[in-house]
Image 1 (cartoon, rainbow, N blue to C red):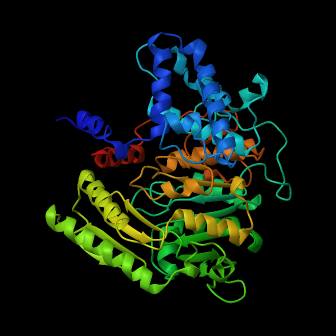
Image 2: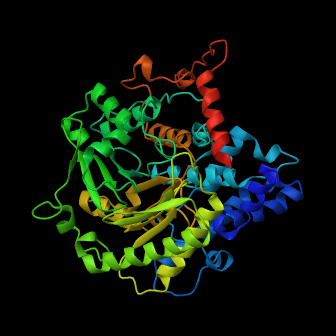
Image 3: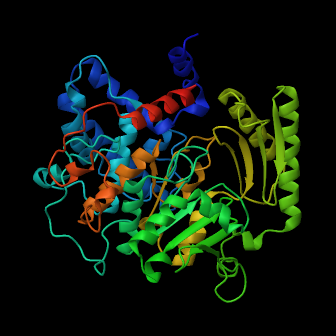
Length: 483
């Protein structure tokens, strides 16, 4: 079986699909077959918008009647804001001409981009009633990494002491969101610059990662070395730096950036302790007992060991204080993703049979499987409580929103953006900043610009002649990871 057919067939399995996006895609298929997407596409997204509004209204009331959307898509979860889907579709279509295609229907990823754009617009206060003329401002804000034709906003730029129009707390996954899977944040100066601008303009930024090194701060700093170096080069003030957090082990180890550009553990207990101040939250780690933690990890470890033996995996099991994982026997070994997903689903099933008192997360990490005590729902909720930022002012950005991923749980407590690479993360942040009328060129040095970054100033740059070996190497690595 070829790679393409294998990947295509694998994506048909239920755990590799998102119910809402698949349903939206099927609804749009009718218009595509009838060659009517150009005239009915926007109306279809208006209908999606109406169903989501109805779902939000019923979810927030005491009425237990399932919404029409819930009946059509039983797996649909919570929506924390309205979504201007029609406006997002029109903006995306004006750039990518989806409705002009005759042979290829709108894809899963394109609907994902439109949902992402709608969420960004909603957090910036863009309403469904936005005029067509003003909507043109957002035509170039697709999240697929295409930077062609993007110009910096001509509207007056905001100063750091003005209110930021957009999310007040942005949390990020680590692997495959800020840096490539298993790698570190090293040389992505464009993404680092956008995160710098967020901090400078009053946004609280947090990395919520499964990496659980307890309070060994140097290991987290190594993973974020390029980002922290960039902040140091820019000379962020202590006030700005203290808005940067890192939550390790999903929700177990909270660290904060200090004036020395180093991460420091936030006290767990006592005055100002993050566990003490969030104990009113039922799932907060401050309410966990060690007996329950041990019970959860024991069950998970037995399940991983059983699956390891049954599937003859060349792997080993690691037990940590708040996590247990199954990893390849060596760095050169790869475990098939089918095996990793099977292992996750088995351990999820085993844990569901036991009266587990604690939140947990069992997920496929791309190369390995981990079961963490706690999850990102708890991590984001604690950050909201600790910083005093509401659900509707929070945004989580991650790449694992399928039920074998560890970003999935964050959907319960805040709006989310589903990306697939650091490139997409960069363009999501670009959209957020531009909607907030913040100049992308602010405090930017020449070294911060990528080869195509000059187009943000309204001037298309001419690429240098010759082969871009860095890009060739990047694409080669991506292809290797596809299977």
